[in-house]
Length: 299
Ligand SMILES: [Zn+2]
Image 1: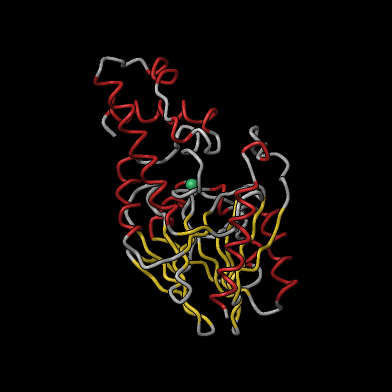
Image 2: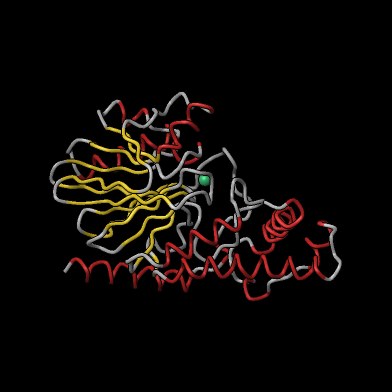
């Protein structure tokens, strides 16, 4: 029944996705500005996707309490708590940070005040120690390679794949449902984010190859506009990897044939296969310059 529910939600999502076009998606995002709104999608069996603007997280309602991920910022964390309270009055037991970046985890205090314990990869401790956020607590529980959060008979497995986007990003897996929640390193049918800040291109590809070996059928990604489904098929991980490989090959080929000026590369390297992906026109030149830097500087 649950499986059926996931399937039907997913199929509806796919239909919506096929109707949606890039023109529905804002090309000038209000960085730090007004949000485009929120929505909460019931995936089934206590799992929800909460979206604010182009950010998404998941929360899991169990018989013994709620597990929340990425509290984004204080304003949004309050909205998220309000959404959870429409569904359950059970305590917020755990908050899981996907990684250290402030745009995803700055609203933790809202859930600390509710008595939640915070869980993250051990490197988040150092990173938040070096770059503290006043309204989000340091993690109470940290781990190195793997950790399983258990509550009310439910499980969320956390796995660290080494550096890829920063050095603390964890992939979350719901083993029974075979769903992954992946933040920042997989965004369906979108080119890489701007200049790829804190992304390590080769490690990113390596991590995606390892993630592809995991046991999962669906992916919920940490970014996506309301015009895209809340849940996608597993193949979006491979699609993301192939895009990165194609990007790196194209830039390398241009450099090998004598073009070393990044301004020229930005204008001349094209990846027509991805013309329909979000932000192709706006962000691909920035992606190209980042890959130029990778080959030029060796990282
Ligand atoms: Zn990030």
